[in-house]
Image 1 (cartoon, rainbow, N blue to C red):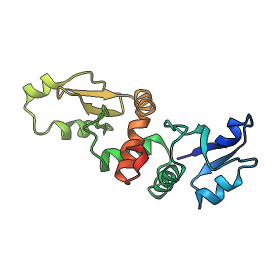
Image 2: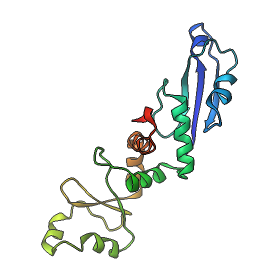
Image 3: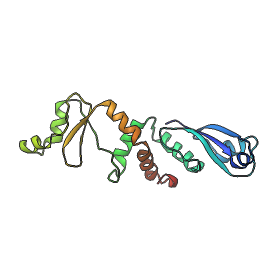
Image 4: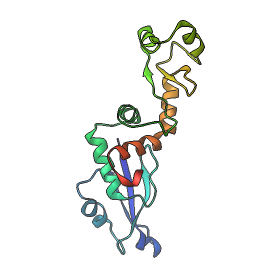
Length: 178
């Protein structure tokens, strides 16, 4: 997953100069590869002035933790929000979020597997908004089965990016994203 940050010197900014370095994470050494490379830096305080990532990064987010996050994402081969979603679904507790647990829906067999322990009347009662042309199935909070198309899935990923990254960071014991 691409994480790009613009790191600037707080001291130089306070004195009216905007100096900084744009860098793709991860790097080998945050101090050597980022902080020591900022031209015109004054003092030892830095902040993130801009970023490109699918999740929110605060201006005072720890660069060390952000770099650890980038390393962990690379190690797990997570390149997209979709990859991150499937990792989180398989490895993290999503009960404290609004993330639905999705199932791929490629054929009637997928639906039958989800419904195998239900009686016909329970199946009839649990059908929510179901479109057999959609790619994903999920159960809502009332145990109704619903479907989601690819566009709705991508919108859900975008809206849930911060929750996804926080769960991933928590799973990898990266503190500033908890």
